[in-house]
Image (cartoon, rainbow, N blue to C red):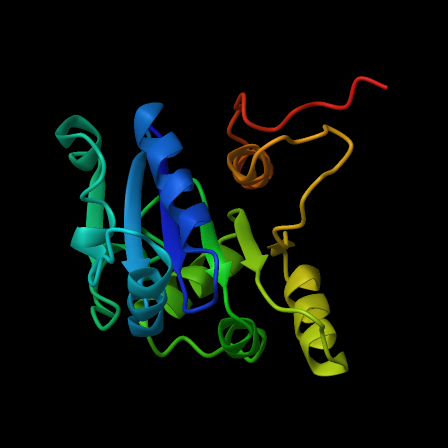
Length: 195
């Protein structure tokens, strides 16, 4: 069973994290979940069920899927996912705030989300960063370049119009499919271009 860390920071786009967790647990991956406090605030604002904690964030899932999730406190710096000796198959930070990008680019590992990302970089494991910001300043671009050079996959949630999505759900599914593909997880969400 694959183990994927899903980090959620305070940028807009909570639905993408939720859909990613749903897909991963449906295909029997184990999810190691860590959310920042601003992520909990954003999710409570954006999502209809107004989840206020990481536990509530996954309450929408059937019990069988919830069993495949380990929740970690943002302050639990001694947690399993803070160590390179704990083997995971990668990490996605969805959405990834510019504050998180800046911290990671500077090597700050002062909470569990940042430390887990730092571990993925040093251990050469996939680290997908779904950066949610527009427009981007030179500082943002330089930080993303630095992270890309360190091995991170910068994957802003940018819709693909070539597959002619008819609903927001189709757009979101395609974006989640791109993240899964970057984590080397086959999926039926990302529609392949047929020419």
